[in-house]
Image (tube, rainbow, N blue to C red; front, side, top):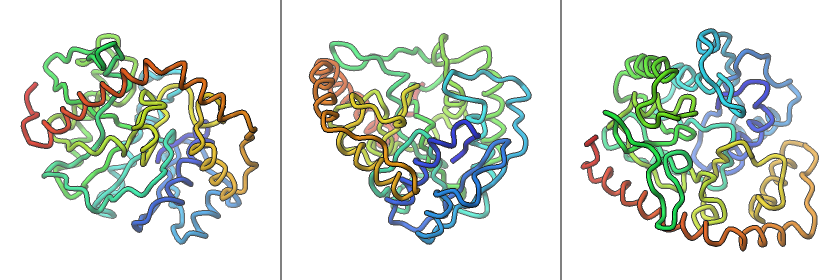
Length: 314
């Protein structure tokens, strides 16, 4: 994970959720962008040590994207551009690297060692929240790619096979497209994303789709897919903290309290009526949930096409 001081409150819980749920051995890395990092007494460091997976903290002392004044959003800083810097630094140390944003919560083990990359250097989950629009017939595409593939992934969770391809080449492509994206996006002329389009251009037609449960984005909120998520990705400005009654189901409320306890934090407040508030919100959103559920079948069809090796056309 990559974070700055502002994002660390979420990063603690995201990393702790991975430490508490993953069953395959892994080395946790926290890349910190232009700050001193957590104190030695921080509960996350103690938790990682106690579980036998000491947290590796790597300080990123420079951010060229900050110097170039690259575009950001209200809830994303230029630290988001540093993902590739972190990934590239692990070449030679690890064969497979899972990157996850700090606004994610791991709920179940991810069988990373079993993933078949099909010869590609990266595996990821289709994007839902930005490239899809809810309508009465399900999802409809909100962007019209110009000389770019319509198969487009979310860069919040990416699995890399660092033994395939020239990572330095992909990094150069990523930097090039980040620069171009400041004034032009081939996917959406009104694009407000930060690094995601550049990742998609750099790895166009060279990525393998992962199951949707590996990166269930917030647009699927309160659907069966959201309930079944191995990893929830809280895209947009509203995150998993602070705990909100209308947004947090029983699973989320319970696990955030488990995480808080493991970190030695005060427990997030829970009161008896929270479940009722969440249920009422679900009733209010019943039609939207139905549209979204119908739309996921279109995304799954794209997944099957890409997995069959016929998804390389623009």
